[in-house]
Length: 111
Image (cartoon, rainbow, N blue to C red; front, side, top):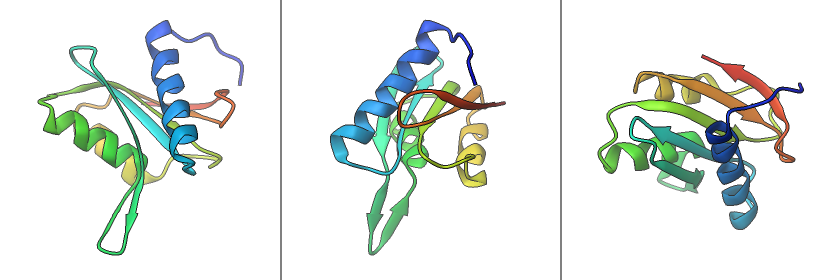
């Protein structure tokens, strides 16, 4: 899918790619809140706690005082986002959810 993105949307995809590469994770996610602050995360997989990368990024935003999200990005080899990831983004008013491949190419846009 070839599409020109807003520079701020490209930025959260780049942040998600960076956290994925830095942590050697299967997925990386980033979100942008209503004030333009960004949060990037990889997933958590502990015996007593499992959270997707999107869930961690949203939790970071909320714990920092975010009231809404403008956008979210997930970098993954998956063909589509999990419903739980779309739901947690919708909990904060949604915004656009971008799914990108490990190379940063846009695979899908969800609202």
